[in-house]
Image 1 (cartoon, rainbow, N blue to C red):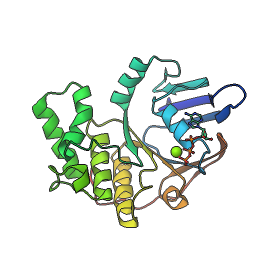
Image 2: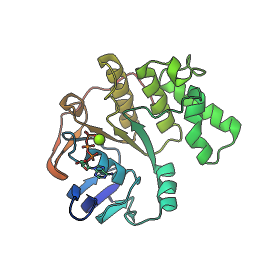
Image 3: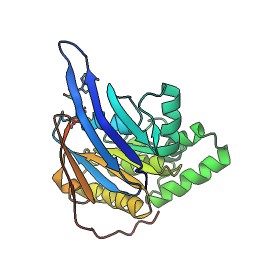
Length: 237
Ligand SMILES: Nc1ncnc2c1ncn2[C@@H]1O[C@H](COP(=O)(O)OP(=O)(O)OP(=O)(O)O)[C@@H](O)[C@H]1O
Ligand SMILES: [Mg+2]
């Protein structure tokens, strides 16, 4: 079967010339549909840079990226944003919610770009918030929610349009241990429900909870191994 993600000799060089930074220095990897992967590495190892490439937020300096068999390494900004919209749900360390929109409004945002009508958007957003256990917080603005709840809104936003790929960059980096567990349980359930879930982390404890771990050092893959199967959770997607 064709891999969902296929990356060949990816390089990303910031500031080419004297002060250049080789943030990615020849990354090659394949990720199959339905995998649950952690990309782990120290600060500055190139994790977010790799996430930006995998998430079609940026293009590489050189190398190829095939998503669903399609070469997306040299597309225009518009073409990339179309692919992002259809294929990928993003979760970030800092939640990235819009401060003056309530939870439902935040989850509805990406659905607007998908061209869905108002009623349908609302219905899907409410459903997604219920799935992450926020049925009673629909009208709360981000500053009226705990960090863990804000991240669950962000997860609802990422999954509302049912993208096949979930990309999370340090999703639990700003959370306490209880909220971390909740978010990890949701990500595990998304994986069990058939999504491809990729988590970027510097935390070995997080990496121990996924199926496959890719360790990067200085923009190169240092290790790529499988964890044992883990128990599933009460969330259902
Ligand atoms: N826009 C940029 N311009 C120049 N250098 C950059 C840029 N973005 C990242 N870098 C450099 O590229 C390297 C990789 O950065 P990246 O953000 O991918 O690391 P990271 O693994 O995500 O780190 P962290 O765990 O701290 O988030 C770092 O040395 C960083 O300084
Ligand atoms: Mg980073």
